[in-house]
Image 1 (cartoon, rainbow over the protein chains, first blue to last red):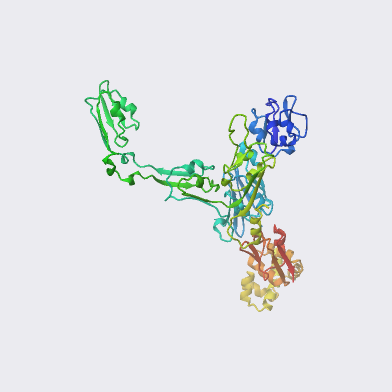
Image 2: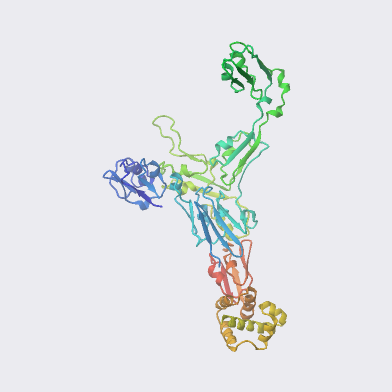
Amino acid sequence: MELKVNQDNCLGCGVCVVACPVNVSISPEVSGGHGSKTTETIMMVENGVIKLFSEDKCTKCGTCQVFCPTDAIWLE
Amino acid sequence: MAANIKEVKAKDFNVERSAEEDRELSFKDESCVGCGVCETICPVGAIKLGSVGAIVRNDIDESKIEIDEEKCVLCGMCSVGCPVDALEFTVDGTPISEIETYPKLISSAEIDDDTCIYCKACERACPREAITVARQLPDRSKLVTGEIDIDKETCIDCGICEEMCPADAITIDQKGPEDFDIAVDKDKCVYCLVCKKACPVDAIMAACRTCSYGEYDLDPKDAEVTGKALIDDDACVRCGWCEEVCPVDAAKVEKPFEGELNLDLDKCTTCGACVDVCPCDVLFFPKSSAPATLDDKLMKDEQFCIYCGACENVCPVEAIDVKRTGIKCTPTKSKSWQKSIDSLKTN
Amino acid sequence: MPKHIASGLKYLAALELVRDGYSQKQISKMLNVNKSTLSHYLNGRNISLGSIEIAEIVREFSPRDFLVFTDAIIEDKEATKTIVKTCLVNKYSVEVKDSCIGCGICVDTCLIDAIVLDDLKAHIDSDICCGCRICAEKCPTNSINILEE
């Protein structure tokens, strides 16, 4: 099972970035919505769309998919 | 030597080897709670727990466990360890739960029909929808006694009684502009006298005798609710909700594992994966007690925990620790089986 | 050709069995050979010397090769068992360790039915065991030790 994104659907809202429990433990400021630039987190909003950086850290809990309003991030 | 044959049907699978004996392992994804006990107990590493969090929360069409039929030796240990009977193992067609040489987890859930009052509290509380209470209610007419009569000559066909009758016992059959029939169904009428009081022309004569001497006309036996409470063994996870909510102690549950469930609230990020995968409704987010107050991040009703460990497996930040301290199991003469069962205990 | 080698192996086994005091009637049953063919064998008729020579070479194979070869050319399991037992004379001590999980793979693998399961553990009959070690190799938990005595 892999984490996938579709940038065409992404609103750039960043809900997945904030909701992801792994992101929070890697970079607490991300969970505060500051979006500080780090490639250590699983995903980040870059230039208004979601981008995966360290998807190997994903534990496949499915939280991002639960919260994404446009089905732009999912596990498959 | 006969090779294993695997058959996959949607999310379920069968692995079979036919030689001296016919050995068959069947997996039912619907019963599986994603606890990973099978993965832990498998002596040859043939079972892999899937991404249960993603599968359960996003309804992904994927099996919760995977089996490598090349590695599986069809020993049956996974079936013995599975606390929810999602894996069934048969030898020559007989489930090993019925073969004495194989150990078996000791667990049960029963509802005693003699004590049960068929209130359906257990059916509502069961987190797995495993309980069905089928009940027959007594005839309403046998619980009341009285008299009712409508004088058709006086009746003006206004329909007020029909509209007001709470028991839908009165029907008016309109045959023509001035032609009608009015009737009272005595099996439905409870002699509440609403019709009598509402009738604008006093066309209804009725009396209730239930609370005066009428009680003697009634047989208490006629008021009994009968039925049967059924537990679907495939769906039941022995969580104990039914036992807790039963007002008459008719439900008895024995859990296969004993243990401890510990939450590390400093680590918890409230992602909710554990809440969604818990098969027993043990974990929940508290309601805020007042605006802008945050109570505990995550709470537990540990009395319903079966210590399966599904929540611990799914937590992305290691905020949950499930300790299994006891395994209730029938004895086995095999040292390797005993060792494997004991390995399910956590230190 | 395989049939000739099979006859050679049956001949070798028959000689051993006669020495062990079995009657021709018993031997014909044990090797699944009709009585007249058997008496021809024992009188050295109707069997080419080449077949006997090859059978004797086969007898020098390792127990495993001998068993697999015999199993392949003799189409009768009981006859295979008899030939293996009479032609392979070494004794083996067998041990099944407590790590055995009773999966039954050894039972399915054994070509001469030397293994049974009891109380979720394999039990190997050392009287039957020919030391081929196929079971030990297939055992997923490495629980079988077979040593030549």
